[in-house]
Length: 516
Ligand code: TNX
Image (tube, rainbow, N blue to C red; front, top):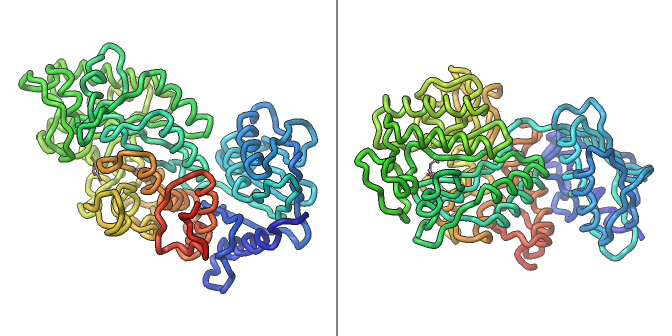
């Protein structure tokens, strides 16, 4: 029996129109079913009748190196058909590693003879699987279903497609971070920046520094119980992320935002007196004692340990909002921390303020402010640094959507889905063009966020919007057509139990998207 054929065909036709940039042509884009986010670089529907019939007993063929990716696909097929597909030779769904599509690119062809997914790397195959997952017809009654023929050729615009989770203000257990990683992976994001330390909490165990977690990890904003990751927890997260082609970038925020460390070890304070644990949300008041031997030992130990636990290329050292240091002490501290990061075999990432310092080759700055002049960023780019863009008024997922939002802040304004989507990373900052932009990252600060539901509500649908900003060519992006495609994802989010903001900017269709 054929299911949803017209729905899928119509959507793919609409996707083609969108990819060509011909918007407002009157196509009914509010159909349910397959709607691709992020939009691939090229989508060409096959001729009428060139479809694939997906049998629930479908066999998946994949090279040994791609066994992990094939497993992700098998789970997606099982979710769609209700039956677990077999692995074996001569399958109707075939994964292959062949040169041609670029480091993260892939080609996906659906036709009468089956589904062919080719990529140069397992990462490319994984992204192709995420696209295929959005194309699979949901039919759990044990019968075959039909997929429209299509040829998709795709690769990302930017190398760094990130999300940041602040587990310092409110701690999130390993299971919640894994769930966030799953949601990120579905939208082809590849960096999870973990904000592991701040005034209110120290969330990663450091060998030889037990008080950091015993005292520094013991509370959180509002005075709850806090929490922290053991080295094994952290390794588990790194592995889970890596299975989804996501790098974890750990942030140890220094020299400011350090009250939790200053409460744990008295010697880190210039006056030698340990601070009280802090559970408020003011920023800018704390600093390590820059220049002291105790601070240098501490920073050396912590950076070495974090680098040891992290297989990825980057360690983030924070560097933001330091109000209690002279510029000379600030830059001295940053340059020393950078030296330690490089010595540990990593590259430094830090918030934009570090553009004041001398940057090493390969260092990366992260832009976040809205109104201030981006002098520090321009200064960093002049030194050859690349930039990750996190403009607060666009991609801070902790901002409220509107005045009714049940959680969130609004110091950078209200941020609706269109604000998150409708900007060009290459045109945001004068002097910071496409070549200087390493990518885009959506931070989720958690001063007001105490549970996973609120986290999801703030991330959805803005996180998929940012994912498309980072992945899709600028010329193919248009908010109205994005909104229509995005509407088709509500059904998936409901299936996954994801809480989301029912934005009035999205044409959710006739059904209430919050009805489960
Ligand atoms: C600014 S962005 C901060 C964080 C806050 C956030 C709240 C940045 C580098 N610093 O400390 O949590 O605003 O939106």
